Image (cartoon, rainbow, N blue to C red; front, side):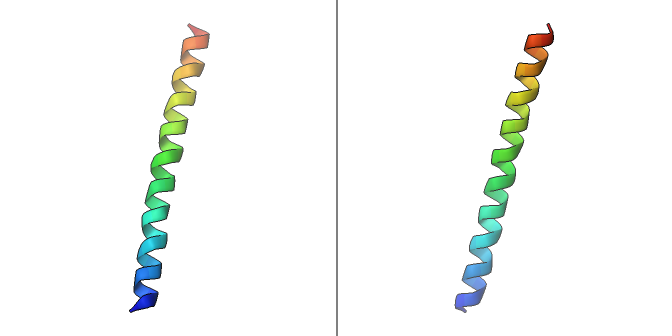
Length: 37
């Protein structure tokens, strides 16, 4: 029971990190394009 909760917590963290990285990449691309323009 506890192990499933632990795995679920890791998966949720992983999803959060993916979204965080994706937003960072979007901001970086936006800034890069802004500088080029």
